[in-house]
Length: 317
Image (cartoon, rainbow, N blue to C red):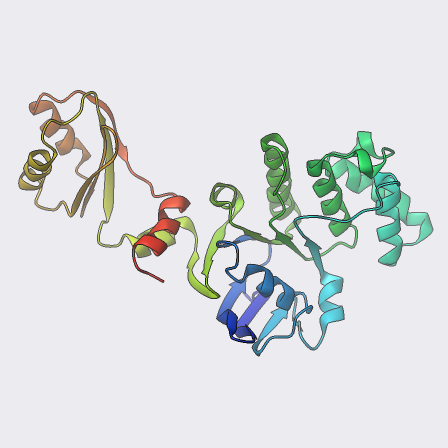
């Protein structure tokens, strides 16, 4: 399957700053791809090059089969872009703003009102269609921005930190809408953010982007396996009381289970044991035999926050 977004050795330098460094990236139709990294990592510069708004220093970016640098107008016809702060005419209604954008995108007078109403309903603003945008909340403006992006029927949507300043309820609704567009309409979504939990909630794959470099790319299972490959299985357990002698406790665990590669207390009374195989049944018997009160025992799954931190604390930069 051919990627709908593809970059090869894409780089961008500003004077003495290398903002994007030899980026090789493939994103496929219908997936939600998270570009995750801290502020200043090069995410926005990458988006500008994908949109044909910034000329690369070297390399190439292709979007929907077009070269973003030499065919930027064709790319813009296929791609919708939603920044973190969308500009509207505050003195005009949401419907008026959307109709205006529709006409700019070549939709006829006879068609534009019906399409605008349909999109306002899709993003949950049908009851606020005639309210002036100046009275909209930040979350409502972002949903209107999404309707604006959708009015030209894009194949790709690029979102650059779209949830900044939105309340938790608004964020939840916005992210659910993004997933729905991907699943039901096969729209490809590039979601750039530094919000780990939001990226984990909606993205099929994630690219971890730091200091202009793509350090890792894949789904959470793949990233976890690549990072923690020496610790094939992780067991998490919680004890009812604290361990009196932590060093002795660790030593006894490793004596009983030679396959254990790591034992760590993650939080107070919550432990993680990494081993080459699943030892939960034997581990339960061992803890009970030592008179420990077990409150929890389960397989440990690494989340995006742990994967992300591993690249910073584990020396992978």
